[in-house]
Image (cartoon, rainbow over all chains, first blue to last red; front, side, top):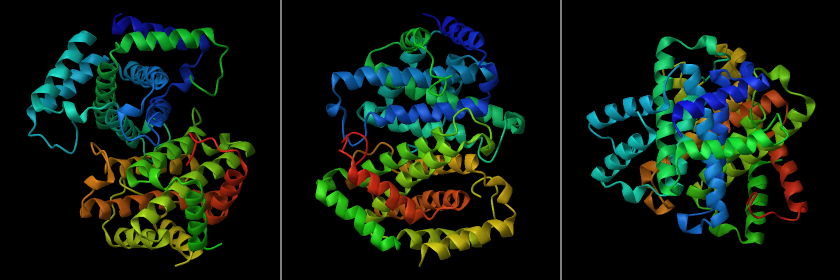
Length: 104
Length: 104
Length: 104
Length: 104
């Protein structure tokens, strides 16, 4: 499925529920951060991927989906395409002398 | 640009730098959460979107791009397509009797 | 109650359950971050403190308590006193020419 | 040093700078979560405590101090003593049949 279609589905879902007023960037940023923490929660007290059971992997997919959902909603508010901004950031990263600690 | 192409670019970038060994799900989940916090940091001490200046909006795009990047890397490790898992989660959400507090 | 006594209680609690092996700094840091997100979750979709009901305030106390608990456990592992490190950081902050955006 | 004295120092510091208006619970919760992420950032791409160098441990102390500072500021706003709420939560934990996954 195309990113544009998925974003259109998400926006329609929001409009049907009249949640537009809650979807400010400041609120979406908080929601994004909370969901990213729920992704990490699956790893709580674990030390490596070997400790993930099949259920953990299923849960992980759905938690990552929540993060992506809020990131897409932020893109909608910022009038940008998710893939375009990844490529834009990516081009910057390719050019810079790499600071290993900062991002891999 | 298509999601598949963007993911292929990201994977090639990683392989060229030999970062494959760092990109375990447990490490990517931590990186994702740290980047989501950097998105929120742009809102620190602000109370509404009205306080965002043009530079904040530019910064926001690049920070959201970082979150998307790690989410895509996690999808690569989980062998799933980002748009597919959003739609999968979205279908669940459409069916359920909605708990307003949980997700908007 | 004194901080030293509280820390002693927490350490005793951990020893009785044989959780010592899980309480590495890397694991405690993840737990700390997850709990800090649960504090923020109470504010999800809210825009000001006025929207907090009495139950939210009760929940908030217990979530802040979880953050403090993991911060104390980290202090135990680092062999430092919580109040000492606050004062140490605080002295640095008092001396520096203040960057408003960085911390208030 | 006593918790009450440290809290009094922090409140005096805030008043001298007229930051009182920024220190709402909703803003402090965001700051707390951002700082907790900075604690975790020290562990980025690491897999165990063995990879921490002496400088990392110094940095860790100061980042944990920032988390404690905002937790204390939240306690001030909630009119509670940090040690009292830890003990209150702790008593609940001692009584309950333990769900291992939830908190250690």
